[in-house]
Amino acid sequence: MLPKIKILDEKNKLLKKRSKEVSFPLDEKDKNLIDDALEYLRLSQIPEYSEKYNLRPGMGLAFPQMGILKRIFVICDEVDEGKFENYCLINPRIISHSEELIYVEEGEGCLSVNREVEGIVPRYARCKIEAYDENGELKTYRVREDLSVAFQHEIDHLNGILFVDKIDKKDPFKNKEKMRAI
Ligand code: ZN
Image (cartoon, rainbow, N blue to C red; front, side, top):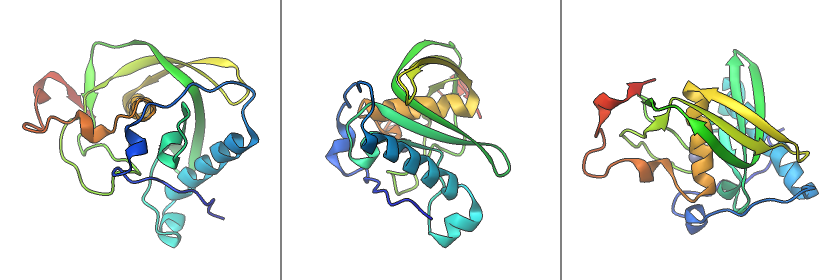
């Protein structure tokens, strides 16, 4: 069954706000929302269900996208066909990152942005992130390539930033030659 979750559109002002740090233990409500969001993302990436429920495939969701201004995001990453890895990061911080920048050649997508947007969103090729998990344990993540892009995209949401905000308005492909396409 598809979990019932409401995803805000980019026009909603809440998406421009900075989310607040979370304290532990988590509320039951937040725990349930974490599970629901992960299940929603998983189903959205399985063609059978994305068709059945008319879902746009997505791999990440941040709490502010669901109208809750808390520093929590989830990612459901398809590592192999039909095989998914779940992440839940709370109060995440980028500890260090590569000098190298990358961008998604076909453009980034976002479940809150319901239109095609062209242009380059510069991201670190690799980064090290510290965050708490659902149980309040501090964990370290080393991510690269598309997962690195996804983590940075979601952290931006917690700071009220959408990927479209990072594209140069006058020159959407500015500095292309200084970055690697993935
Ligand atoms: Zn997004």
